[in-house]
Image (cartoon, rainbow, N blue to C red; front, side):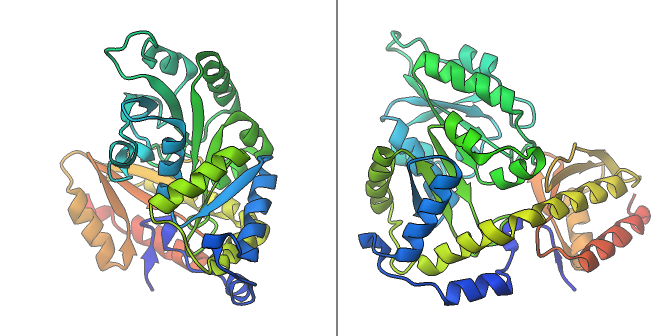
Length: 343
């Protein structure tokens, strides 16, 4: 038995999802003639109350397209210092769009309107980059799956409106946030100019993200996606997986969150653990007692057929997901409780 908690990206399609993929009616999506893709895009845009949507092979490409939509070379976006668009997208902000990042040190990856306002460059001061975009991430990856309070987002939306800034959401794990808050996706659609939504993490699809926004934005996004090499042909097989996940997999996220909290409870009893960060969704970040070797600990777990990941600076991460079964869960909790000798 292998317990893989490196990420929720390791999930495999369910039987029902595979059946939906095999039975999809497809065409050539580069010509926008794939009926399954067109239907999926309409389904997602309607869910969020937006005019249009565009299917992408990855969340990184969807985010990078949104950044290019909202900025010009030489401008600047504002984001948290933990943001995925800054840390984990290969420097694409600068490479693809010629844009720099103004980093804010928020709370577990979450920033406030007050922090953003203090970071906006004066628009008439041509010596500094023009601030044009704010990027939020919900849930936060490096922040341990933290969920934004909707009132904070509303205040940021109000500030962006006052200052003439675009507002983009990296919603790779927004499905997890919505499971916690119970909020209507249309509320997010109303607060953000664009949103990227990932289907290959908690929802278990093999590939795919969707960018939603206005019709004009998605027309331009189609051109940018082409430039980035993101056009796919019979992509309807993948879109069918996303549509199936929306209907059948969202309800399972609650169990992922519960398992993460149960892991945290056990880790908090382990003498070799220094700190376990608050767990709100399916991401759990913890650190070992000073003097203990994180790499050796990861290797020890690997020898017990348990895979986790190190984030650097003493932080370790586990991510629960739909393929992390009750049997896996029992084995992990039992193994952790027997590792006292590690300390």
